[in-house]
Image 1 (tube, rainbow, N blue to C red):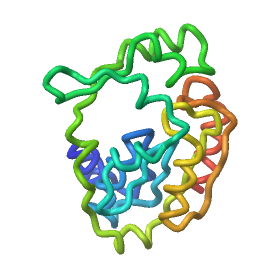
Image 2: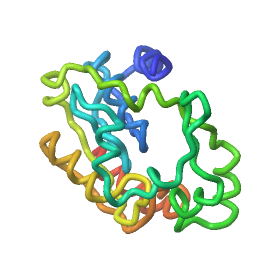
Image 3: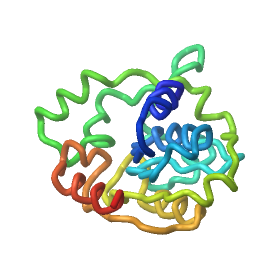
Length: 185
């Protein structure tokens, strides 16, 4: 998150931050630290925790997600990883073979600590900020029901719904770019 804050500090004008999946937490925390540097936050099939909530608590409410049943926890419980045989089904169900192969090169285990820790930020500071959402209807990682519940809990607002899975930047990049431009305007 420090790299996001650093980039915001160097930006000549307020920025539009887009967070995907766990990246929703990162843009939320960055916006809390530099609210004057934010033009808009866009959550793309992303976690949108309220202050005091943990990502794990949100994830456990997600009855549509396949992630919980398809992960492997490291022996020391410090990281989790998606089972290799589930990567396509969960993250890239509607993506082409080349995109799945390319994306697979960057997948690494994720630390468990950020998932269990309650998020802390000034809810009042963010309540006045422009926050938008790109819903992904066929998402198998962050279920559409949880996406709507998180967004509604934050007060709702402008959104766009795409009929796609978890990774529209691969499966439908043109429609995603159009949605982002609409929400950022």
